[in-house]
Image (cartoon, rainbow over all chains, first blue to last red; front, top):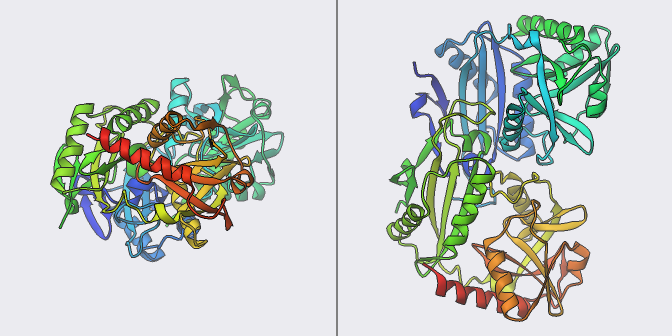
Length: 284
Length: 284
């Protein structure tokens, strides 16, 4: 069955969901995106994603073609039309179509695209029970990773490097310190302390990251927001990642070395449980 | 009149020239491009662009959907159909459309798009007589600038920063040294010596750069391929850029400071003349 996709005000069968070859998203990667999880047919952390979307648009001086309420309406309509119980809603806004020129065009209307991906078993992921393996790679991305742009080629390459090494993902390292995973924030745990890199232009300001750190504090865990090295990660008791589509996911191996016992640790498991429980409660 | 655009084997009116919203060029900037100049209805340096295209594709393990001869045929057909005397042919190849996943898809067919831009007066550009003004900005791009990908958001931002400062372009600076312009290679001249950054992953391997350095050597000019600073540029006799669409273009001001006499210098003028003359001769 063909999915329904939203393109600039229209609900279309996915085969007809197209954009101009002159779209600046296609020609210049001049676009931003968000991915919102769906659990039980409801949206997780929609407010957080809408807020970060606006920040990305503002940073790039890009117009937002929709109000937050309209955006919520389109999310819900797609979830409904495509019968999504567990899955994702992907949203992308670009600066629109115009004759090719590096300078931003005058008067172009932004392009907005939303589609869904059904992911049955998203919450009960088997990976949450076995844990992920990661490799470390050099962080070669551009300098404004706080803006959620579609310049995702290096993260894609990183995912392929991980795959080639028999791992699930790559942690990126800059000046000897871990920045983040290819599409997730990275954490280690030592004793009762969770360590994750502080917010800056070097990493994505994860919506799930913010929620998980809040839940961690509420659960009396210590949180240190600072950089850490791969060596420190290898000596940690636990490691995990967070993202909108994986929630909290344990990491059990880095560059072939087991972390702690080499099995998912209690902190990651507990945070995943809390995150899913609280997110389901707050889902809209 | 609507241009004719080439998309995956079809010649279409530009209004109908579209790609899937699932195209990885749109979702991941997972695509590469080339721009070839047209003078007198003929292609400049086509071989060089075709060769660099193949290199970019190889670096990204991306399939080339066309042979070099087919590519030449499409270039010529578009120049003919769109009546281009002076202008550009833009070419983009992406990894194709597939359900969104950071990992490269199995079995996706590459997307290929070509279109033209008519630029009457390209060779007789008034800017070549007055010279360009540039500003310096930090180079925030990713680490593989030798691959000609569509991750062009930062160069676009740079062009807008230049515009806001009343300049024409920006030279990007990394670790205190100039890398290149937003869409061109950067040069300074001191005495009889031309200085331009050596090839590496830090800069684009300009097709026009290679030709101009060859012509410079043939004209008994000294060429030093090494990094230089903005301070060194400010103390130079001349500065200029090269690119497929600007050929050789003098730079007369950097960050508000005049270079040399503040007018286009003889070396840039001579190299532009030679480049245009030789390129017209070799055009196909």
